[in-house]
Image (cartoon, rainbow, N blue to C red; front, side, top):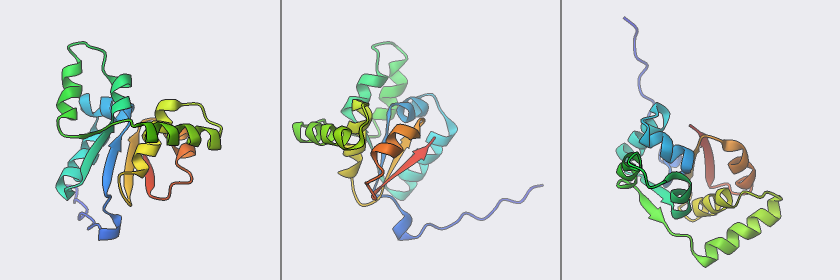
Length: 143
């Protein structure tokens, strides 16, 4: 029988202030993707709030019955609005980075407002890594 490794204890400096899901992470959670579910379980165990930008709903929901699984995940999250200030900051970020993905820029800027240590879960980290390169409080996590 294989021995399980003892669970490593997280130091307080390693515990995130928040977890933010992009559309691929939200869809992954709704579809039972193991990596996302593990991240969400850990966040719940640590008492860390899970957030979703309201713009992520546009990429995820389609008005079909299968949206019910997404809504079940959303019930356990805090939904962050896209304000005019956030929109301006996302536009400026796109200008600074030379990128053109508006939704990812909004998600990145949303992450900066969630606390000192934010885990941003995504299935495609390339764009978000580029957008958050100057944001030391945001850690992009491939799921």
